Image (tube, rainbow, N blue to C red; front, side, top):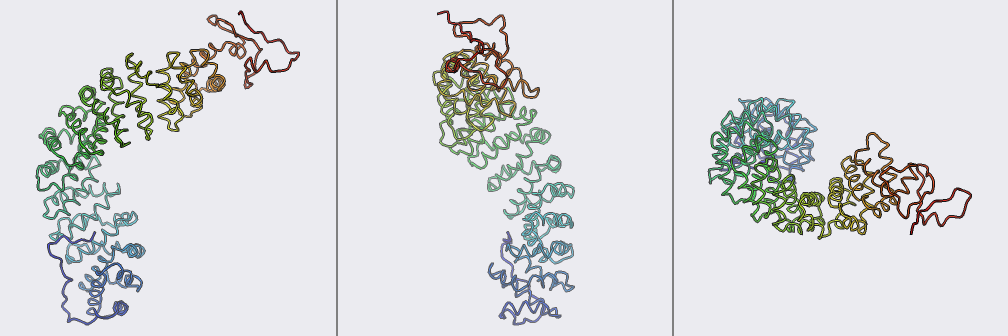
Length: 607
């Protein structure tokens, strides 16, 4: 900040006075001269301080310590234009220092600086007042003051200044100010778009860049995007992309266009004028990772709207995204995978992306980069959800083993989505058998212990999906997976609790697993859940019933009856009714108790 954009640096303005030999004096002496009643002395003292402060931060701190700013502040409203101009120059050059900025805020100089931006003021005053404001606008409190004190209007007016330094400082200040949403709305009302678009034709790249960065921030608002379209802004931006000499501005230009893609009307406008084809053609030939990444991110954001997804599909955006998966840049691969996930919401896109994209995404699961792995498996999850055809493609691309390996990934998102893909594949018998042979139930024991609710929910859902055969339930039992599954019944998250109830219901289909679930406290937890109108669900009721049906001794003890479908077999025992909250004892535990005068325990043993 503060870097001059003119081709040659200007020297401090020459005064009409005879030179005074004060530059050679000590800074303290010059600061004392700021109290002089003579305009000539004041002007020369300010000039000397400007030169002294220009030499570095140490000198600025020296002047700060000598109290120079307090004296200079009074000179901002001096009647003599040369004194006022030279004082503003000192403020402009000193404001880059953090400690100076702090004191300037305390002195509340913004109002005085804004008053220097009047059209009739000297261009040098404009330059250094805007420079000072740009330095100070980094702070939120200063942003608020500039807004409240009416600083936006003169700053926007100065975007049309003939002086490039004034333009540069003004647009830089506005860029900082519009980080605050209140200022974004205000500059829109003050018609900032035409002068900003005008700056894109500047001969100075730094001005063009700042104008684009400002447009990128303000075009996040829909109203601004409409005005941008009305002012032919989209055409101007597309022309920049077509100009190879402006390649250093392409990333920022694309960021502005990316915001415009989020708006259906703006996108339709770009499409009607052939701009969208132009944009995609430009992107397809670009090999700049920053441009590729930002383009994919823009598509991701835009694709949240169903109408926009349709338009992007008509323009065959899928081809561009699939090509990005083949780049050597991890950030581009992540962005492309995320865009594919977003475009999957369109069924036509999903059918295009699946056959070509899935083999590439499967390969990315073996990446050393955890973010790439997560983005790729998330895309696979979206591609295979409600799509048997795409699920088959994953199996054909030998995706099962890398998906199993992804269950050990560092990122929770990767683990959760790997489980989701495997669950989607489980609907097809050959894939289901293959996944089971890879030890899916043992592998799910870890995710069931996760502290992430999405991982917990999907792991429990997968247990329900794969636990339909006895071998799978035995595998989970032997892997110690039942304990963490029962713990999930306590979850405060409804989805986790529901899926855990479903998994318990499936696992309770055989007696051994049902008995272990009961010993781990599943019955008590489910009874408690079913007493709550808010927490119970159809799976919690079904799970409790299934546990009882595979543990008839406990059912009879708790309920006092058996249903007509319950068949008593060897090992059934009646130990009397157990009160709620009391532990139901196993035969082994009962056999160790001393004899009492209570009624006998009836045990069925036909063998």
